[in-house]
Length: 102
Image 1 (cartoon, rainbow, N blue to C red):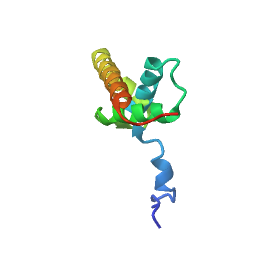
Image 2: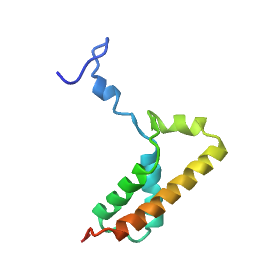
Image 3: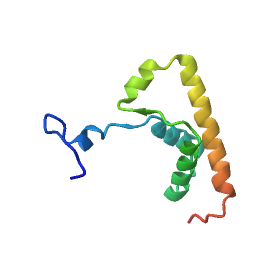
Image 4: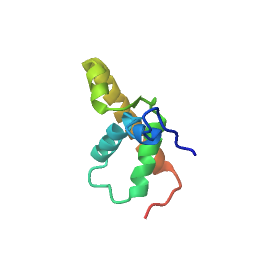
């Protein structure tokens, strides 16, 4: 069996469903903002999001509120600047690729 159970019999996989990379939602939001009106092709947007995320350090958390609580305003600003730059670079990279999007 691939899914283990804890001492109370709960599936560990369901307990881990809340673990995610904090940057994912922020990168998606930033991509939507920067591509306002150009979101027609989901493959194009997904490629941009993937490229941007691959250029940011992973920040795995269980609850978004936990990250918001621990970040100072300075850290939040720096994080937003990094996200914005990563999305700009990702858009340029994907636009320069030979991939054809319908």
